[in-house]
Image 1 (cartoon, rainbow, N blue to C red):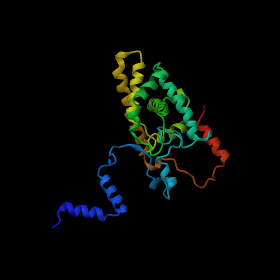
Image 2 (cartoon, rainbow, N blue to C red):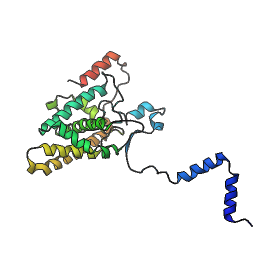
Image 3 (tube, one colour):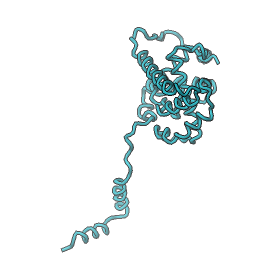
Length: 258
């Protein structure tokens, strides 16, 4: 009577090369790392972004005016596009934020670059390739611009920056879109950098607390505006003729006065 080992040996002999290859895949599957359940900033699934109602869906995840973070950074390159003009605005906002504490761009950049690995781990890039230097500069500009935007929005001091209300209205929605996100960790790094560059060390904790209050107030204000009664929203008159390319260009230029 054949032993169990003999039966296993006979089975190996009877298997074809194709069968052995398939069984090898099955054995190796047990050792492969399962997908992480960590919540990441990622692209909207292709099934949604390419569905029949694509145009309706896009407004929930693709920015109209200001792109922050790497997922939409290269979505539009046309020099006349709103996204490109938004890039110019971000640079000015970021510069103003750093100047507000008499800081140095190099110090802010280095603080971001030190934590670039953990910041990258907050995203699912899905084929996008960025160098650490490219990401660090992008995070620096986007994060500083967002923080100053929050302060100006909460304090309603846009006249200081000479920004139109049209741009503010579009940008504030862009910052809450699914693909248009920055890690909170980045904001903490930049807030710490701001505090370090400030001259009054006695008020360090007060500054950090103040920024947290600004962020909380900003979120509350935006969500309140989004759930406003339907009758208070602007109604679109679809009976009006479509704008020509030149008229659309003039309308977009009116949003930016730089």
